[in-house]
Amino acid sequence: MLKLKLRTSLALAFPLLMIVLLSCGKEGENEQKVSANGTSRSHHTGQNCMSCHSSNGSGEGWFTVAGSAYDNAKINAYANTTVNLYTGINGTGTLKYTIWGDAAGNFYTTENIDFGSGLYVSVKGIAGPKYMTTAITTGQCNSCHGVTTDKIWTN
Image 1 (cartoon, one colour):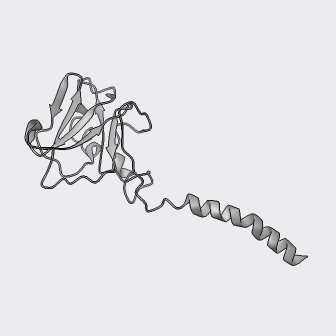
Image 2 (cartoon, one colour):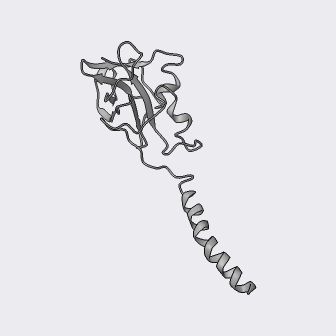
Image 3 (cartoon, rainbow, N blue to C red):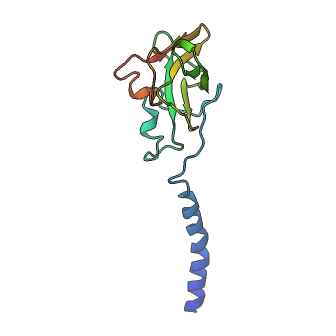
């Protein structure tokens, strides 16, 4: 009788154990996440995305570039922007990467970005691009913008 109870308990516990193990399987992995125009899966507009979306964070995917764009009043999120990374200032040189913003005003990618000695950013709205005049070597846009420097904005 004891063997039957033990076997029944193990039979019931095994599926539960497998569910727990499989649900923890993503820890330490970099799930692919890339923003896209029109989607609205992102959250926490204006916050430093990489405080969670990094190898040590709790967010899914380890972002290499992430931030938030606002309208020219710098109050409302700017939906569906386009962020381009160039090798030269003011959109010169080679266009290396394009990241499309989502409906919440956020843009992000887990794709490998080679910053080299620096890349120059343009943020494009319907009125055309705005350029960042200094090169970036990190993609943690909201770690400075909206904190120590002006928010990223376009019109």
